[in-house]
Image (cartoon, rainbow, N blue to C red; front, top):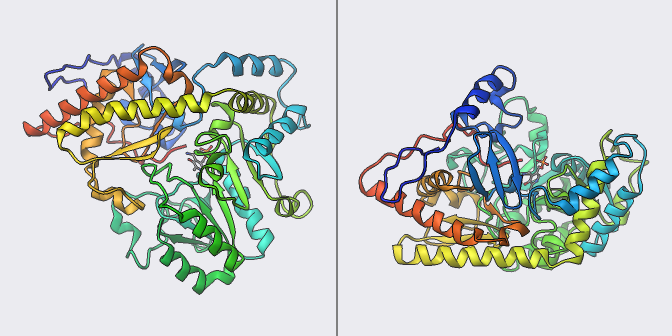
Length: 467
Ligand code: PMP
C-alpha cells in the first residue's frame, strides 16, 4: 500500500515485514499466495491476524477499520460473541455426519419467515453453489436451456456464471446493441457459455428484444437486485417490477441472486426492499455472519423437483457450523434493530463524506444502499456496468490506497462497495472513517496537482468482483 508520504497529512507507514515473508512462503504453495484470485494483491497481499467488531488487524499488527467485511458476509461484526458462542456450543457435538440436524430445519424456516415469500429452501456451502443449483432448477422446471444474465453482475465461479462479468475494458463486452459472451478465464467450454445470454442492466427495451427473439429457449433471468459486484449500481425506479412482468409474459423464471443483498437491505432482502417477488433466490453472506452458510430457495412447485427429479447434494451442505451460524445470525437480524443500526451508520458516513466532497467541486454520486454503497466520481448516476468506465475510478483507487495507509480498509477498487456491519456504530468509527477519507481524498487531489503518478500498489489484483 501507499507508504510514501506525499501530502500534508502524512499517513503512518504500514508495517509489512511479516506479511511479505509469509507472501513469499505462500507463493511457493498457493497460486498467487492466496486461496482466491480476488485476494492476490501481489506484494500488497494482506495476511490477516484477527478481527473484532468493525476492525481488523493484519499479521504485522496494523489496525484498520474494515470496510470490506469479507466482501459482505460479516453483517454483525467480526468475532460476534452471540453467534460464535452458539456455533461453539453446537460444534462440540460433532460437525459432519451427512445426516440432518434440527438447526438446518430452523435455519431454512427462518429464511422463509424473514423473506415472507420463500416456500422451501436448501442449504449449500457457498454462493457459487447456490446460483449453480438455482440455474439448474430453473432449467429443470421450464425444460429450457438458456439463462439471461446482466453484464457486470457476478454470480460466483461456476462455468455458467463467468460470462460477461467485469472487464476493465468495456470494448471487450462488444457492441452495446449486440454484446458478446465474454468468457472470464480459460477452461470454460464454449458450449456452456453459449447457454448464457448477456443483457444490459436497466435496459428494458434490450431485454424485451432478447425475450422476443429467444424467449422460447430462456429458462430464467438471474439478477443481482443491486449490482453488488459493480459499484452497487441501483435499478431504476420500477425496473425490477417491469422485469418481473416481462418474465411472466414469456414464461421465464426470475432468479434473484441475493447473496449480497439478502438479510442486508431489509430483513426480507431485496425482494422486500423493492417489493418484487422472484421465483427462486440465492442467499449466502449475511445469513451466517461470515460462516460458510448459503442457500437456494423458491416457490414450492419449483423446489419440489427436489429430491426426485433434480440433483443436489453436498457433504457439507447444512453442516453443523454453518447451520448454527445461520440460525443465530438470522434470529439476531429478526429480533433486534441491527439492520436499522447498519442503515443509520451508512447514512451517517455518507453525510460526513458529503461534507468532504461537496466543497471540493469533484463530481460524485453515491451508488447502492447505505449498508453497501459505492463512491463514484462521475456527473450522473450510473445505470449499467459500462458506465463505470466513464467515472474517474483512478481517483477512487488513489483515495482507497491512501485510506489503507491511514487505517481504514475499503476494497482498493471502486467496483466493490463499502460494506457496513452493526459494530461500525460503536465508538468513534464513523468519525474516523470520514476523517481518514478526508485526508486520503485531499492527498490524492494534491498528488494529482503535483503531477504524481498513481501508486502502482494493488495493481496485481486481477479483478475486484469478489467472493
Ligand atoms: N453471487 C453474488 C451476488 C456474490 O456477490 C457472490 C460472492 N461475491 C457470489 C454469488 C458467490 O458467492 P461465493 O463467493 O460464496 O461462492
